[in-house]
Image (cartoon, rainbow, N blue to C red; front, side, top):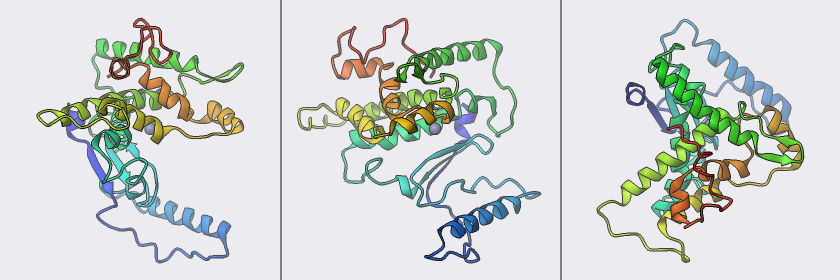
Length: 271
Ligand SMILES: [Zn+2]
């Protein structure tokens, strides 16, 4: 609770803009531009040494289409670049925004409580704040998720490394669950939103996650990701967390033996 209470959310762009005027960028120098940008970022980082911690500093630039959690600062970031379709649309219905950017927000929050983030306390110090019993139960629940992803194959004989993708997968599982709970809460005391194209609001929520997160990835890239990327491939970032959620099964009236329903003894729940 203390850790949640000290979360520092950053949305859109920083309060103080960085001064990029000394970065030399030219239209005909792609490589040199990259070097100049890296030099700027390095000097900007080095300039922080010896100064008090500045939690308002951003790790991502405003146009970046990404989001982040920083365990050392206990901050979450959502730059302007991701706050547009398909992640967020001010004109979209709530189900779609909760199912896309809502899950992203829940994902970044959950990083504070994944296998790595959970090792940092509410002030970003690397130290154990868990009781022995809680830590043991947490690790057991994480092992369920790692086992689940070990079973996801890219092609014959090549499958995900459960431990490598554990943090991201705990993030997706916790994120989907907390965003769904938030969506349900947002509907309380209001007239029920209309179905769209025959899909209920609950179904639209889960569709939105699939439409936002799903993508095409070449087999070569998938092989590289399996070996080195802490993120699972998009397909399993959709199938993995949703097949653990009883809420998904209920929304789609799935039978107990449906492919998107993990058996109760295999169902993972970390948070
Ligand atoms: Zn993540």
